[in-house]
Amino acid sequence: MSQPPDPLPSPPDPPEGDNHAASAHLSLLPVLVPAAVCFLALGVAAAAAWKIRQIKASRASAMAPAGGAAPTVAMDPDSPFQATVENRGAAPGPAPEGMVWIPGGEFSMGCDDPRAGVCGGPDAMPDARPIHRVQVDGFWMDRTEVTNAQFARFVAATGYVTMAERTPRQEDFPTAPPENLVAGSTVFTPTAEEVPLTSHFRWWRYEAGANWRHPEGAGTSIDGRDAYPVVQVAYEDAAAYARWAGKRLPTEAEFEFAERGGQAGQRYAWGAELQPGGRWMANVYQGTFPVQDTGRDGFAGLAPTAQFPPNPYGLHDTAGNVWEWVSDWYRPDTYVLHAQLGVVRNPTGPETPFDPAEPDQPKRVHRGGSFLCTDQYCTRYMNGTRGKGEITTASNHLGFRCVQ
Ligand SMILES: [Ca+2]
Ligand SMILES: [Ca+2]
Ligand SMILES: [Cu+2]
Image (cartoon, rainbow, N blue to C red; front, side, top):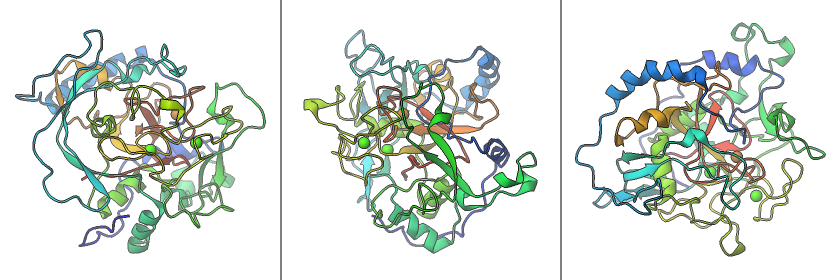
């Protein structure tokens, strides 16, 4: 667990802009849910078409095509994926503690429709297509999800108060009933019996007193959980930690380059099969969702970090355990736009968020899936798949890691 670099910190940052987002968040009480929980795949809504046209011009100017990119090598001519071409050259110095060098390079980003495959799950993942070429520069990346111990050092050094710990103010949420103005967050609750997987409201609840120190509510704690990933962090909490540590959140393209480990078009961080040799390779969900997590992979619920083998770059838990915030705004059509631009270099996401399913909620991308992902419902532990979440909404299956 790395000590943050000296010199330390800027004082705790005030909340970032976009506070309008909080309205969307709390006015939904008490049925507030994390928007990015294993949920239904979305098509690119026709209603979004005008927005595509609207932002096309700005996108095109914002992303220069990669000049002189390495030639790509065709693999299977029927595959939408082409070989990953890593940047040459060594890491720029010794690794910061707890981080590994990701060389960057040019790769095929996205996920093909997994449904026909074994354990492919029910989701078509249309927002992860078309598969297109992207180039990213090299960077350092945390080997693991940020842990409770690391986050505790940040809070001790700065006095930072996370969003879930702040009591909502009536003036900020004029439409919320006063009894709903209590600090808290969203917590997964198994159902008593099998339920239709049509509404995630059935297994998420807003829990007063839930926050990173009390991940499942006021009666729970992180005692003995130093090595577990911190959860119940909203986007600005994660970003504030990253700034304090002299780091930042990865972009979506950086995360995907890293999770693929230099290999092209692999379904999983560890290869082509969900369970090679019958072995579980990530902390995901077994059993009947959302009734009972049998923990066949060794963990029912959250696991400490790094309990499964790393990917070829030395990264643990890019798939599963907790979802991870990345810095891009979410739009379902991001890749449609990218694919029109040739090789996209160091993309940082669209200028504005848009989710046709919940157009009033500004969302950023989540990556990697969580301990709740299962091929019964949501297979977003697969490489290249995309999640999303309203930026003020935290939950007990969402965390982050940093890059620099
Ligand atoms: Ca598990
Ligand atoms: Ca993860
Ligand atoms: Cu999932």
